[in-house]
Image (tube, rainbow, N blue to C red; front, side, top):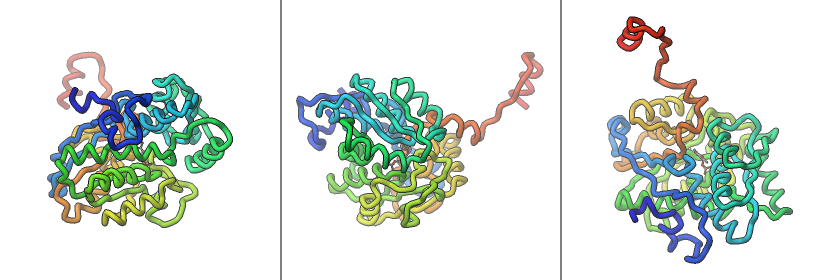
Length: 342
Ligand SMILES: *Cc1c(COP(=O)(O)O)cnc(C)c1O
């Protein structure tokens, strides 16, 4: 079998807290492509690659988390998992719970979930609780709930999540033969940037980590929680990151930084990645590329931007922000010719 046909936990079992006989809940996650980005490379004068985490089974890197968190929950005898989510954690936990044959409940901010993510979560049969509050509030409540009920919490506070996500750093080091100068990554709850740093340090590597938040949801940049986080990039619409300290440590130790971007800058990168490189990611993912374009490479020669989730997750934002055109046309040849060639 090639690496891409091996479940993530099997591929990296020697570096993960799972023993050979442990139950494995897998949908063949991980081993995602690393795509060259010629247009971006030309623009910034460096070798730019895109780590396509949207190629995971449910379309985001959260599947690395869920194979570990749900496998561990099943190992401990859990009959149900729960999470607070801005959407992708919900979709992923619902899928892995379905695969495991256990129950899943997700708590999401009411009316704030992208359509694709909501569709997935419901299809997998989860119980969706639409909370009259934002993600940060949902996380506080769900943490409290799981203290008094026997339900496994699968949010970024779950230690297996960081373990699962660090495998993306292993893949990058293998694919680039250790030669990576800088990583550009969107930051919400900051579990992902924390995980990459853990993965890199475990392998003795130390590329610079450049994290990016949206201006309206930039607690790590501002140095204080944001009570009402707002951004078009719903996956990073988080005002009080669960992995605050760990993320700052990752940024400091790697001699990187955490900086912010306007929604306009994020959306410009979102369109450019799709129309220039042929890769459709979700808005939050585009923050990595927007950060690269805004702040540059600082001398790095080989850089990777993490595209955390697939574009199809959020069709509404795509339909409102694109470089395409729709031409309505009568069903006859003259009109068609004019529409096509016009
Ligand atoms: C979860 C998520 C993020 C943010 O990752 P954190 O670990 O919360 O920092 C970014 N992009 C997408 C698509 C996500 O699903």
